[in-house]
Length: 352
Image (cartoon, rainbow, N blue to C red; front, side, top):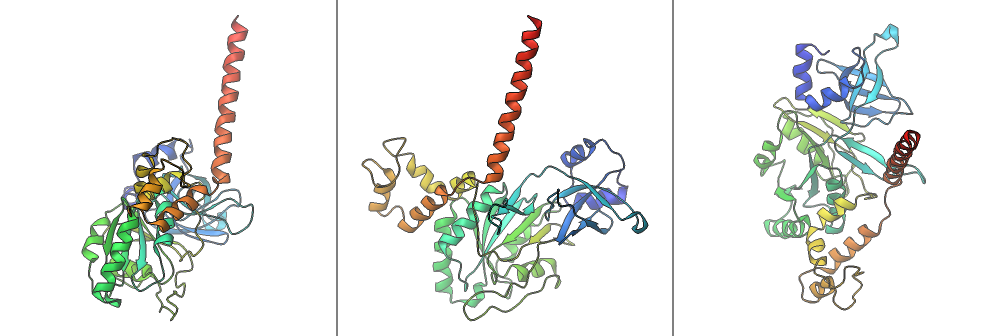
């Protein structure tokens, strides 16, 4: 069992009764909890509440930043600590694997809030922002759009960009900040509640690392200049969990140019809640929204209530296939149900 000092440290990392119950279910009193703060090739760094420990990962066990693990402590002479289990994840942020046929990659786990960062002087457009939001909603966390670098553009230009972001943000809040002047930081700071985890997402050059450093009050992550074409220099090359001294947990991620919303059906619905609401007004329940008579979306396009680019983005995302990982999971559940039903039927037949 964790010591009192370890328990206090674990609470700061987000540990609670549900995690404790999941750990107890392993049935091994030698296993202690730890949270993953960084993953490298073949190794990961975990926080135990009192120390940071390096642990070897296993090919058969996917480990991501933010995961809660059950580990067995061990000295260097004993081969070091050993991972026993990855505790069930509450929220997961995935992206498509870079290798054909591979499963989607878990980027970060157990997130409460996702800050989707978009630099006001950067290249992120509304279509890309929609994909970020769909992926964020699908993770199970609450997304908030953060428009950074408000000091880098004229006020009128910033206002136009914020309005464009608000038009696609649907249910998500939109905040405007400047790490240089401190504008809007007061709106972000209340999100940093002890034990709650915030992930920062966005393209390289969106100002994520600079924002982390400002909120942390120290230079804990490297930052870099943005090139003339508006793209960043990928100063963050790995995902890392940062525990802030004043409370709250931040996860910075490398800028991701190729996003996938595979299996993000629920996330797409929430990111495009305005279109989903309009679609309910279609005359026919099987409407394909291709301009047929009685299509509510066609009517909304015609009278200007719906922007064509947003409509096309929604159609593209809803047309993407479901995740192979999720499909496999559904098949496994269905197979278990069939086996259970067969056993029940066999027992009933034996009694007759």
